[in-house]
Amino acid sequence: MEQRLSEWFSWLNVKGSGANNGNEQEKDPQIGFKVSFFERTKEVVVRVIGARQLPNDYGCTKAKGYVVKVTFFPSKEKFETKIARDTWPTINEDFTAHLNYSDKFIGDMLKGAFISFTIYAILDDPEEKKSPKSKNKLTRLLSLEENANFIRKHVHRSTSFRNSMTDRRTIGAVTYNLERKNFNQNIRDYGVSTPDVWRSIKSITSGIQTQPRESQKGSVEVTLQYSVSEDGTNDVIEVSVTKFRCSVQTMQEHERIGGQLYIKISAFESNDVIQKKKSDRFDPTISLRLQANTATLRATVNKYMLDQVKIVIRLLAKNFVGKKFVLGTIEIDKDDPFWKRSVAAPGVPETKMVHFN
Figure 1: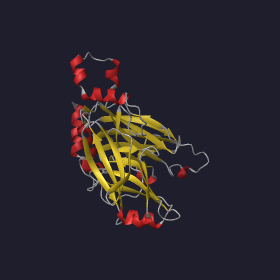
Figure 2 (figure 1 turned 90 degrees about the horizontal axis):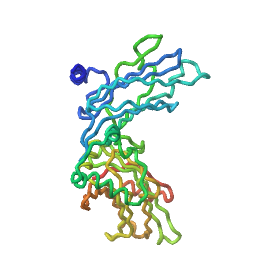
Figure 3 (figure 1 turned 60 degrees about the horizontal axis):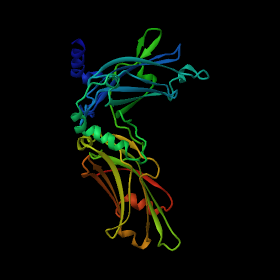
């Protein structure tokens, strides 16, 4: 009861935490933490305070709990919290990393150091695996989720690297730079500490140039390369999709459709399809890295027909009963600045994060 009251008081004082500003939306998931630094022992101690407004709905599945992975850089020491069961959990776990800078002055110890917090939703409870409950046979047969897992196990195809594992979904991440100006509180053993910090959890991104406004349907990282031939009749356009990302809300919409997603790239000349390519299928997620060549299209074109060439990238879903849904579309043609830059510099790959419409 006391823990629940504490969470409600914390919610009422969100604006007073000193970390939020008016530009952050209240609906965004948040994580709270506090960092302490001890110069004498060269230690950084992180307390994961808790989290707020974590998403719970993943289509037919509810999150069984949440885990926060804490990674210290440059040492790359990694820690994980215990599984928290609430969408507004109070965690209060401490993790200690050592700064190995014996050849530097004390004042340079924190230079370049930072901490990454990655939040996962747990969809498959390990405690339930240890003590499985009896289950009606008819219920097992009617379970769409179990049937889908059975189908996936018997489909032999290459898979792309995913940031979220089969029993986890990546909600997002927060990075915090260890700057001395942030440590404004004196604590025991001659240490210094930050105040309680609350940050909105952001979806994992690639760092590549993005369009100004966030897309409601997701985005992909596209690499476009144009290569010329001797006579101009066998020029090649190569289109690669290497990363996908979307918001937590968009991922939840994808979860509700059921089934898996995939990306389809098509090249058109005078509205006729001249080449097409489908990516590997993947489960709904906010961040996905595709393996090389699993979503790469190469089309041979005539340079004198370039004005009639168009590239179309679609995000599609196919549910458990085989019905297809178009979730987003991208069109790149002669009027697109992205296309113009690529054609103007043959042989030079042009990369950009592009939004689905």
